[in-house]
Image 1 (cartoon, rainbow, N blue to C red):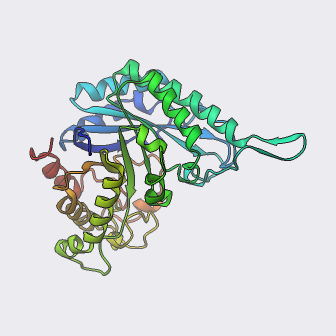
Image 2: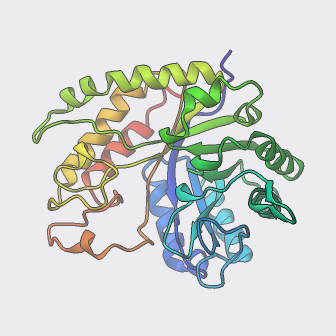
Image 3: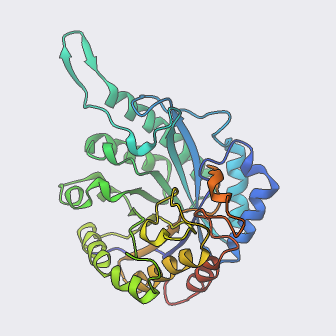
Length: 340
């Protein structure tokens, strides 16, 4: 049976925001603007680091990781503007790889006297990180806590993840969630008995699926193209039996982006209308699905700066929708009262 949960009219805010950003007047101004679009949930990102995709220790970085006091301040400000907060630490690597690349072998001993302990060391660090930020989320009154996002290559370490979830529960009593890409093989995981995902309150997936296959596709054609994906996610939600949502979803405002929404390297020029069509097609397709807990658009602000997003005088070609046609689409759909 599917459990109920408030519908998440969400936005991701602050990915890769440097230390000091959340205490700035600009950060507050961004929160003010988000509130005008009927956004009700802000996924507040705190970037934590490890040296490489194979490292065993996570840490707060003085340049990249926001300080705890500024995190508290911006959470308070978001709450003052009437929005809820999902605090989500997100792991990145200094060697240029991403959290989706993180992988390691199970603990073992192949050569006598040389135990392989990558797994236990990483999860010990993950547990300590989780306790720290889950306690912060509790003190700040966050409504939800996200364990991380897209750590797909280590999702099979079921026992270790259950210990992380238990640690989070010991420090945080609110809504507990995590999000992954389709590469995590949802069908396999959700047919695994006692999988750790079932210990969460909801489960998110990244959605960057193409909605068109040619230039000039209409919104109606995009909705038609999405029907197979709607059936796919309906099936996944049925296997899970708990609230299921799009933990990341986005599309660049670049010509051709609806054929490759995740493509930060799409070669076309600015096309805010195509981004708006993507968002409209998503809402038309999924809005009335009872299993859909909503979504968190990726992303409000571009802290991970890509100069080629700004090489067209017509407009910013990136994922952000502030000041673009897609903002109006979001405002209208998020303002509807037929989901609660």
